[in-house]
Structure formats: C-alpha cells, structure tokens
Length: 207
Ligand SMILES: *[C@@H]1O[C@H](CO)[C@@H](O)[C@H](O)[C@H]1NC(C)=O
Image 1 (spheres, rainbow, N blue to C red):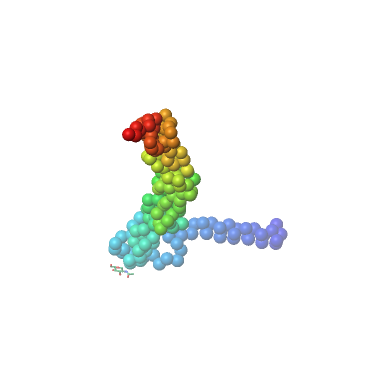
Image 2: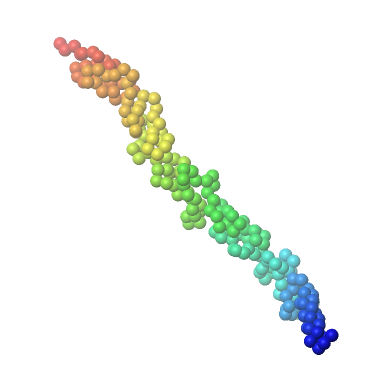
C-alpha cells in the first residue's frame, strides 16, 4: 500500500468515527446545551411528561408548551376559536370543522345551491336569490301566493282547491257565472243587476 492509500484509509476511519459519535449524541428528548440540574425542583410539577431541568423550569415533551407544559400545541393553530385538545387535535366550535377548524360547516347543509360561509364567527347559508330560510329550503314567490296558496318552487304557487293562477288569485266556479256575473270565490258568483241566483241565472222581478 502506498502513501496515498494509507491517507485515504485514515480519512475513512475518521469520518466513520464522526458519524457514529453524532448518532450516539445526547439522550432522547433533551437538547444539547441545556444546563440540566438533576436535583432541580419544579413546583407545580411538569405536566405531560415534561422534565424539570432547572428549579422552576420545565423542558416540555413534543406537542406541549407552557410554564408547566400544561398546554397542548396545535400546528397549524386551531382556527375560528377552536381549542387545542391534544397535540395536533383541535376541538371546533359549532359551525366549524376540519383538522384545524378551518372549514365552515352548516348544520344540515345548505340546499338549493346555497353556500355555507362564516359570518361574524357563525356558519350561515347564503342563498341564491330565489330561495330563503336558514338552509335555503324556502322558495320565494315574488308574486305572492294568495288565498292559502303555498310557494313550492321559485315563482310557483301550489293553490288550494277552487283557486288558480300564478298567485292563486283566480277563483274557480265549477259552473260558469251567467249574464256577465263574475266568479269571485270558489263556486260563488257576483251578479250584475238585475240578475241573481247562484249562477246569476235569475232575473229579479221588478214591480
Ligand atoms: C433549587 O431549589 C432547592 C430547594 O427548593 C435548593 O436547595 C437548591 O439550591 C436550588 N438549586 C439551584 C441551582 O438554585
């Protein structure tokens, strides 16, 4: 073996030694450089497996923080007022969900194309223009539904028996009103004088 060969063997040995020294470094959980006093007292005690390294100073285990390691930490932080329950686990206020409470959730969902968004910290459905209600479940009939009609879809009224028309505003008389009489409510004619009777079929006698 020549001089060059010997030098590279020494270099190799040196780098292996450095490597293993680095790996065996420091006990788990305690960072190098801490002044660790084995007789240190922490009162109150360190929570959640924290180690008392100096009088009154805790070294917290991963996932905890605070003077006595009393607080779990969540990264990213819990959003929208969520509380960090365990390391990395948020408890979300009503209306929010997801790992970091970053998602808005509307209880029961938003119907008919409504969109769930946060308004002043509360989840709320924003409804398309023809729908209303907390879940956008109520159709809007701009014309109104009269005479007991119910708005069943945007602009569409379901009318009770005896009524017709877009707003249930047209009465139905099974038998039409005669002599210019007008159907004013189901099966009720308003007659033009001098006619009378259920269908305005009678001419009043004049004396
Ligand atoms: C830590 O506190 C104890 C008593 O509570 C005391 O005897 C000791 O000297 C303190 N150690 C240091 C380093 O201050």
